[in-house]
Amino acid sequence: MITTLLFDLGGTLHNTEKTKESGLRFCEHLISLLSEHGFRLDIQPEALDAMLAVNGEEYKHFGEKNLIELPQAEIWSGFFLKGLGIGPEQLAPLAEELSFLYDSERVVNLPKPRLKETMKALRDMGVRLGVISNIISTTLVPRALREYGIADYMECVVMSSETGIRKPDPAIFRIAMERMGVTAAETGYVGDTISRDVLGSRNAGLGLCVRIENPSVAHRDAAFRGSDAPKADYVIKELDELIPILSDMNGRTVR
Image (cartoon, rainbow, N blue to C red):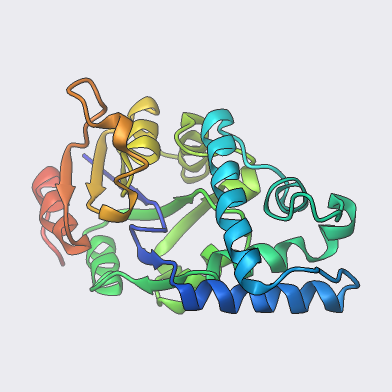
C-alpha cells in the first residue's frame, strides 16, 4: 500500500517556461536591485540575460555532477554573476531575494491543470502528501504552494536549498521520509525527469515511481533513454491520472 506521495515542483506541480520577455524583465530588475545595494553592473539586460543562460547551465552541470546545492551567495558570486567582481560575503544579505526572483520572475510558473482538485482527491483517499524540490530559493516553494491553494495538503517540504543535497541523491528522499515517519516501501514519488526524479526515487527504494511527461526536459534526459535506463512504474500526461493509479494500488475510492 502507498500511504505517502511526494512530488517534484517544477514541471510537475507547475509548468515553468522562460520567455524572452520574462528573462529581460528579470535582468532589468536584477540590475536595479544590485544598484540599490551599491553594485553597479556595466552590462545591458540583454547581455546579462545571455550571460545568465550560460552561467546557469554551468551551475546545473556542477549540481548534477556533485549532487549538492551550494549556499545561495556562492551560487551568485561563483556562477551566475561570475567575473563581475562581487564576492559571496557582499551578496549574502540579498541572496535569497535574488534567488527567489531567479526562480519566479525570470520564468513563468503556472500551476498544472486540476492541481488543487487532484491534491484534495488524494488526501480524501487517505494519501499523505509532500514535496521534494531542487531549487536555489528557500521561499519560493512554500509561497507557490500557498498561491495554488495546496499548502495545507502538504505535510512536508524538503528543498535542496535547505538541505544542500540535490536529487537524484537518495539522501534527500530519505530526509523527507524520515520527517514524515514513513518507509520507502509505502512511499511514492511523482516527477518529470528521468535523470533526477526517476533515478533518485529508484535509488531510494521507493515503492512507486510516476513520471509526468514534460517535453522541455527531454534534452536533460537524453542519456537515460536506453533499455538499461531507470523506468517509472507509470508515465502520465496529467496529474489527475494519479487518482485511479492510487485507487487501484490501495483498493480505495475517493470518499
